Amino acid sequence: MPAYVVVQIVVEDPETYEQYKALAPASMAAHGGRYLVRGGPVTVLEGSWNPARLVILEFPTAEAARTWWASEDYAPARALRQASARTEMVLIDGVPAPVVPG
Image (cartoon, rainbow, N blue to C red; front, side):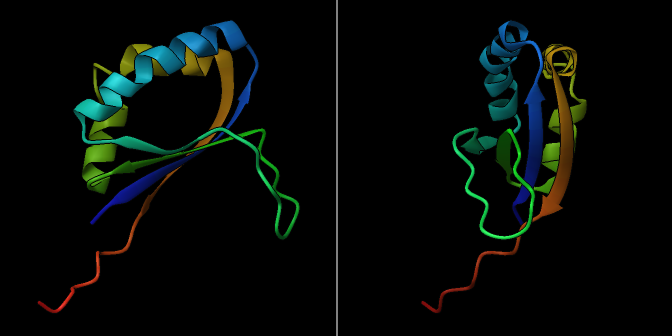
């Protein structure tokens, strides 16, 4: 079952954050992860939540996402992100793919 990492980011040091953006994708891909959303304009449809930057990552499983986040290969990128931005990050399970009768 897929799992998603949803991150709200406020970049405080753009130069260092650019280094993070260059480093992070390789470690994420090594754990089966990929970007679904990587910044871009946000349109508020309801409520008052209006994140400055929103990122959504997809992993094949929640365990793969946890392994990526705690991995030695992601550690240098994580340190850059934590030094350059304020983040709120959650991991959430997706829903199983529907079974299509064959």
